[in-house]
Length: 125
Picture 1 (cartoon, rainbow, N blue to C red):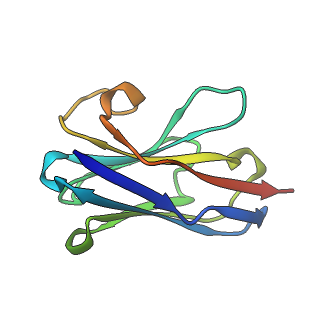
Picture 2 (picture 1 turned 135 degrees about the vertical axis):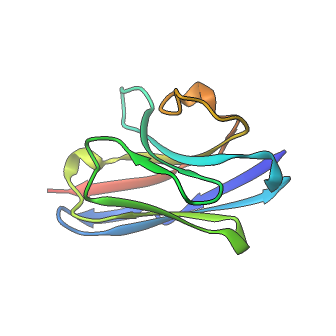
């Protein structure tokens, strides 16, 4: 089992920045990649970003490319999401997730076995 605790959300004005953190514990050798998803009220959970265990491979949703940066601190099994130039449409609950297996469909929530509890990000206009 892998336990994930995500944090760092808050209220910020449009154009501002936030840094989300995800701390992994437990059997951390069980995952091969970690991702960030978000879910706005009344909408489905959507892919934001992914990073491989080694940190060598990353990807982003088109809506956040150039504004968000995912990174990891291997020694601490932590993953971060630096969010800049935030927009009101970025408002959502953000979740970190860990995948046990590689998948070409890594943008799908079903490909992830472990989830954090979520952290609220609210961007005011």
